[in-house]
Length: 411
Image (cartoon, rainbow, N blue to C red; front, side):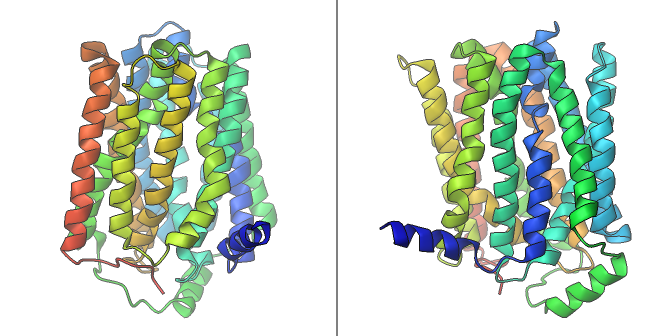
């Protein structure tokens, strides 16, 4: 039994390139310091602003990430993913430190907007880098490895963030800033420099573009419909960073340390399980079907928050377990789905639109979630979020039945 398990883990990690492992190390270092966003609503509440104002701060981050995602895609296609990633990490680190010095509500909003523009420009470039360092056969594995690094870092960062917040909230900004800066120079130190010319030449030699369906992402109707579903999915998922921490504190009476412990469960579960799960699911179910499964599990996770007469810490743990299962079933395959529709010439634009869809959801989810809580309470918010998840589930099934796009793994 033990040997079978060990062999399963070996198989799940087999075939990944050395450069993908190095890129994931950079992500792990970077995300181990990612804690500001998860505690931003609590921080705003801590320094005297309302729950609704805290929600707007996170929404403004989402608005800035729209600009950053678009710019990151353009910069990645224009100058290459290598230097775009470095610039985003380095400048983002400086802005995290600057944000921690802001005190007025206006200055916080302005600073977090520019921080998000710079910080989120990283994502399209990073997506292009993953596609470059992987093959069609190992692409979903590569995205899963990158997510593993992100979420393992998130688990470490959330636990550390809870501890730091219980001591002094401003420590969050210093740690987040310095880990960004360290990650930027680590990228330069351990990954070979790739020029835009090398990026395009090597990509063309590695991949025969057999799955390209549309020349422009703006004309790819199935992809645009898919983006609409991503907005619905992400509106629900982003409650994890806004209303969920508030509910844990005010509804379930958890302190900052326990909130950090519960939030860290998400990253640790993904680190232990996701690569094996992706290995077992890859090629066995269409991507869109897997997304529908994950979305319905997410609906269930939010409904569980309304179970009465159960200890708050236990409810928080059960919720985090189920929403993490939902994330692992669906999100690794979302990247593979849209990457399979792109070419080396427009991959940055596809990645930018995909990231922008998540940013739109962050704006809507962060601002509306806290307003709904103020108006009709947490109980009704979770019912609304579950209903949106069910609609998203139906949408993924509909798109699958239309028989469009790469439904199984790209080879």
